[in-house]
Image 1 (cartoon, rainbow, N blue to C red):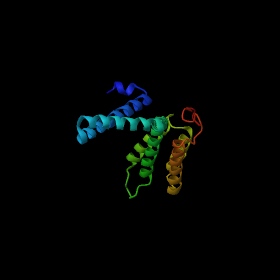
Image 2 (cartoon, rainbow, N blue to C red):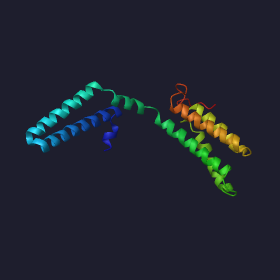
Image 3 (cartoon, one colour):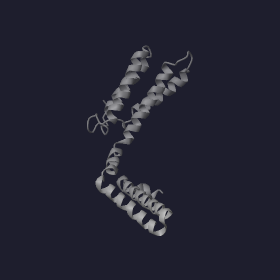
Length: 177
């Protein structure tokens, strides 16, 4: 199982496509056998293989398109989502829904986690800048609406990066700014 993961994603998608086609042809043969014995099995297998072959010739690109869609920088997106989650947890500790909802120790722990994750160079620069603004607003602790607005700006920055609207090379920029 581990050896299969070392192959490129494109190769794995093609192998899985072939496996599905073999299964389709096998099910056509089984259906044909149920209807008319061995002759029906041959006719069913031939018919489904011709249909699958025609389908691959008529629309060969969906598998390739799905491989290209997955080829984004999922690692940077995951780190950015984790930064957002940690800042949202810190926000919940700073502005709890109930009085005494979060102790000072819990607030300090969530603040430490949020700062450590936000300082990591994995997310794009625009996400790190928005995270810094959100942390600054949360550290002030006086204006809940301003803090919510900065957390919302952070989530929109992550959304923009996920949809490819960030600057090229932004995710690899490791300079602090």
